[in-house]
Image 1 (cartoon, helix red, strand yellow):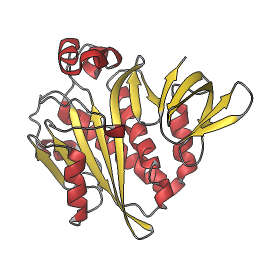
Image 2 (image 1 turned 60 degrees about the vertical axis):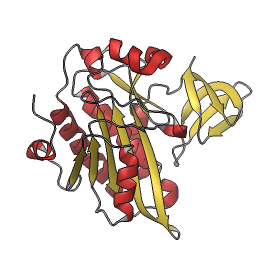
Image 3 (image 1 turned 90 degrees about the horizontal axis):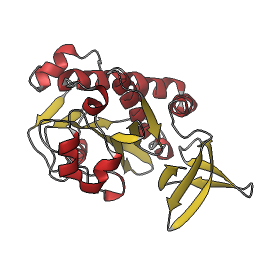
Length: 264
């Protein structure tokens, strides 16, 4: 397999706007933090930050993202979209679709979980973290962080993650073969460019439709936990802001902006 370098990725990259430049590090605290700092210093749209490992990798709600070296993908991308700030969270959907497609190309059967995960066999293989920076009332830039478990074995997951390993997986575990990180990264960046361009040209309705088609909980019974509340009902879809809509047993609907959802 090819050594993980910016040059080896660019050599097979088809994308024209995302992946120029690529900053590749041996170790960082968090790729999102590095990308945010680059964004504040004027980094152009499509700047990519990749690290072989992270010491302070994090997911949604400041949860720790286990980031051992040499095995997985830890990447953040700087976007400078001309969109309303309220639409920025939909870049998480763009990233989720791109990851779904990249995972599928490896021969694994994936599904998307609201709000920011990709699953294989109901176990988490990837997560996204989207963070927006504004200037006045407009979007300055958005950093989308993506973590994908590529080559972690069950033994490594249990050692690194503890109990959380029960609900985690890797593409290698699902397919039984080693994943070429360089090729996977190039494929993912290509997919990101395709779906970002479609978001910009065709609008949020298209992205919500495509996301929903890949969503594993559509019209399924779920339990949602948010703001110290717990509700159950049928997940009927997401609204135009990407918020989850649940129809409760009494016939009323609840819109969940942020929270944890499990299938029942």
